[in-house]
Length: 367
Image (cartoon, rainbow, N blue to C red; front, side, top):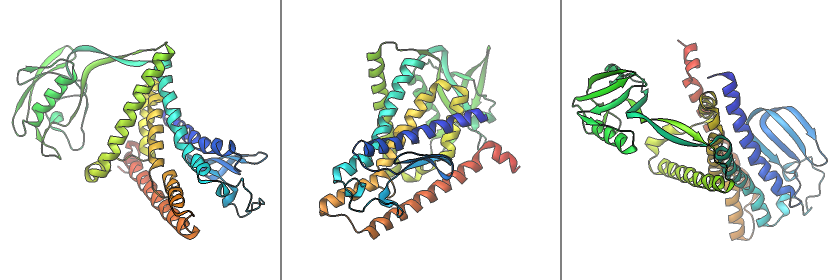
């Protein structure tokens, strides 16, 4: 992972956070609500500009940001009863400000996908030859495939005399053969460059108790990008991709709730996201638009969850206020928000430390 690729990934995250906070900012200013701070990042200020009403700042740690209101500033000279303070506005006005960051991320994600379609192009898979590609071996622990001498880039042509093409159905058929042959030997015919080899191996049990040989699989295809020059078609394809990504994210969060034990380990923090983005920037920079759209939709979805210290948590307070006819006492709101913030910060620090220690170059330092 190069430094440039890592910086590109961090820049993508910083832009998405900027878009989110800009949504809050525009929603407030367009309604005449006072905003006294607009900050990208956390920590020490490295650059700032004082406008007529708002201080704009860039801080040392770009993976975050905030929009500040004079409601929370004890040094503000604005009278507490001023109707343009956020807290003095009707519930609907405040809900628009709070939800605007999520809306901005969703709109931005859609136009990123349209840009991907129109500028970079859509992926059009084309078969290279028959068979199923092995792009990667599972290295920890040493996989059955590795012990049998299989290498990344090998192509599975047949298993127990069943031949495979390049369709998803062929890939599924091979996966089923592996699952159903736990402890039973399989004879594979593989292509390695111009060579054709025969390999025998015996699947071992995975975490689900099914047969596994420890490889990643994909159809043996190359991807050619086709630019969509028709604006109407680009908007339509972008909408389809947006819907598909959104559905995948909803399903992923559903699995996290219903099957927490198995899916919790797949939760990614900032370091992992940067690593994934850096790999994309290094190997396929054209896919950064898609990566940014995916993270933007994730960011919107996470922020709308009714959890303390998130936009969804503040919207939940507004809902309670609407039902009660008055807001919850400040001490209760502050206590819930502070507790939620500490939990989120603790989770963030845990993920950062965990994922940093898993980086290859960090592990080498301790060898």
